[in-house]
Image 1 (cartoon, one colour):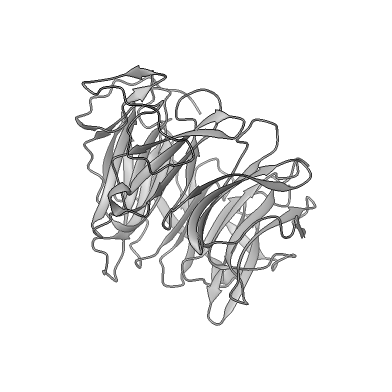
Image 2 (cartoon, one colour):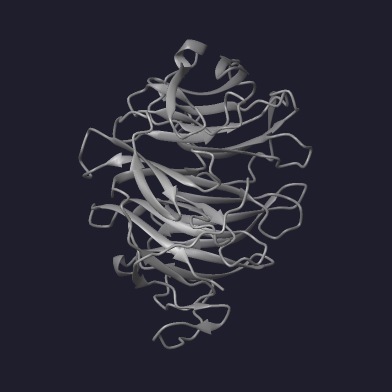
Amino acid sequence: MKKYITIIVFTALALSVVSCGGLIHGDQKAKPEFARDNPFDPGNTGPALFREMSTTITPLCHGNAALGDFDNDGDLDLIITGTLTISAINGLTKTYMNNNGSFTEYNSGIPDGGPFASLAVGNINGDSFIDIYYTSGDQTNLIFTNNGSGMFAFAFALSNAGATNFYSPAVAIGDVNGDGSNDIIQTGQSSPEIVAQILINVGGAQLSNIGNRGLSGVKSGSVILGDIDNDIDLDILLSGENVSGAQVTKIFRNDGFANFTESFAGQLTGASNPSLLLIDIDKDGFKDIVLAGGNGMFNLTIFKNTGNGFTVAKTFSYFTQTFLASCDIDNDGDQDIIAPGAGISGDWQKCFIHQNNGNMQFTSLNLNENGYVKPVCGDIDGDGKQDIILVGSGTTSTPTAKVYKNYCP
């Protein structure tokens, strides 16, 4: 992707995180570092500086969001779904073109849907443009292809491939059979069944359902693709509620031809309403697992990949249901974790950034934003720094859309 250096004018609304690399910005005074194992400390010190920016993004409840260069101009555009109120039964889909760091809504051809629509983005038809997997929340699962300018057209209904139409499924896009084309993994409930399906790309945004190939399905879950065992193919990590009602998190290793075998059984805990990351936190060459969700209490747990299995390396407690994102917030070459969540006290509900200090050690800081929001991060304004967008329901069930610009030097 070509790089752009852009000049951007933002209106700053609030200074959210005070320090970056030990420097103190603005009129705030330095505060003592708070305990790294307590992400709910209301102190406001940390290694990254963010400011909330004015935005024209429509605030939505039940938010879902994805970034991608839809119009192929070298910057990140945005698509969001959700509802205008917490109780609305009709959902909205909004697409925004990035113009030098500012978002402008346009009619992209993606329809509105129900209140719990799912999104996944990736090149499905092989033309190098980003396409969209979209489920409207009413058990209609569709593929929309991109003409290269950010305009999308309906291309394929997954039901035509013999696939199950799920209500709000977990979805991942990637090449699981090694043929160079992106396939789709989806899992969820289509009453009364809970199933997982692999949809192999047979060309031109056409897909073929080859069944589960060893996968077991979950509902109310999350699924992610990545090379867990370093054998140069995409394995599957999924978490959610299985057919027996148990909360599970499972790894399925790929033989390179989309045949999967469960591995490392019993080494990962389950969680309700989970969110997952698969990233190399300690830069040892193995992808580690971050799991957020409920299991009696809500936790965020980091499982270290030793190369031979997984061990618990870190746990942050007292999170509500949360979504996760990761990016290198402070430009130090490792992945930091973004986790909207809450402490026991509602006064401490925040979107936390767990800044990676190496060796599974973190400094926790927060943005002045709370509630059940979906985070996405990326370099929105082309300055080489990772910015954050939050979409979802605030703690008072109000629709939310916030943009935080990264000012870390």
